[in-house]
Length: 414
Figure 1 (cartoon, rainbow, N blue to C red):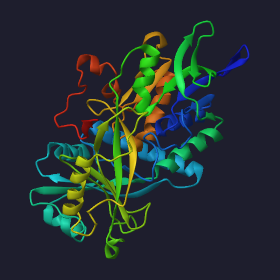
Figure 2 (figure 1 turned 90 degrees about the vertical axis):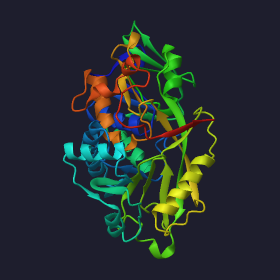
Figure 3 (figure 1 turned 120 degrees about the vertical axis):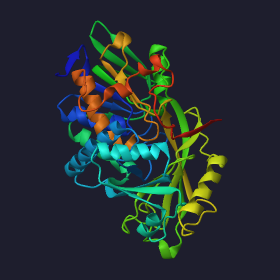
Figure 4 (figure 1 turned 180 degrees about the vertical axis):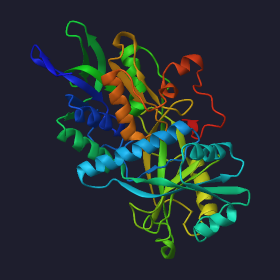
């Protein structure tokens, strides 16, 4: 698919709307394959208003849904490939610890998923958890721990920059502060027209929309159709480790990334980006307008988080209040599964949307980029169970995919 010109405007092969991790990985993939690519973002590149900024994200193979575990295994390989191309690291390996009640349905599903995907893991009882981490993690008698390999901590802003750099080196064009206000078809030119708030128009054979928390707003403006993706504002917190235990909770001290199953679902990373601090957050928050973030933590969730830090870390992490907090956006679907599909209608297979990553997508960026590039360039993607991510699932059931365990993200409305 060669780029061509029509009149005075160049018609590119692919226009990618959204410069977060998904859009950047897609632009990297399409440009690497030799297609002329334009990447647009409505804000400055590497901004902090969406879902792809900050200092740490986890990568873990432990998912209740086996189709995600398989995707993480491919994504891990693609992370390594990108790092080898750029010459620096953004992913720092460690183990993963998942804890919760022994009869928790999600945690039991995690164990089955590990088995079906041949993941290297161990199941520990409450005493074994205490011994494994020398008292740094304590759980009740009716809880278990699942320790698995293949996990790690990703530096997100650095990672997005890596994929944008590689895309640029591949010949992609990158433009920020380009808010897209419309996407339309030009039948006379047989191309897609992407219009921005600046009045500029860009032309492409194909288009990918990876607009994060703004996905529903943009799709509705373009088609009049609502997609079931709701923006949610969440808060990431850093807690001070007592000085004598700082190394024990660090990635250099082999402390794992971790998740606590139950209500609420808690997650975190070992001390890495800020010496002496450990990141622990609640997997939840408040539904919001992405253009009107509060930047304020949810007090109810913060109280739950303080209690969890107090009870789980053996008194070795100060729990009265976090030292620092950062706001972040989720893009939630009812079933917490992704939306990766053709927009359809008048656009047919020429526009692909990728969104609704529901707070667990960053680690998947490289494999999502590969899948979306396959879809938009070839009309199909192999190696991933795409039926879980189709928009049509919500026509059959507004709640989407039916699962045998509860959703994990806690939500509330402002």
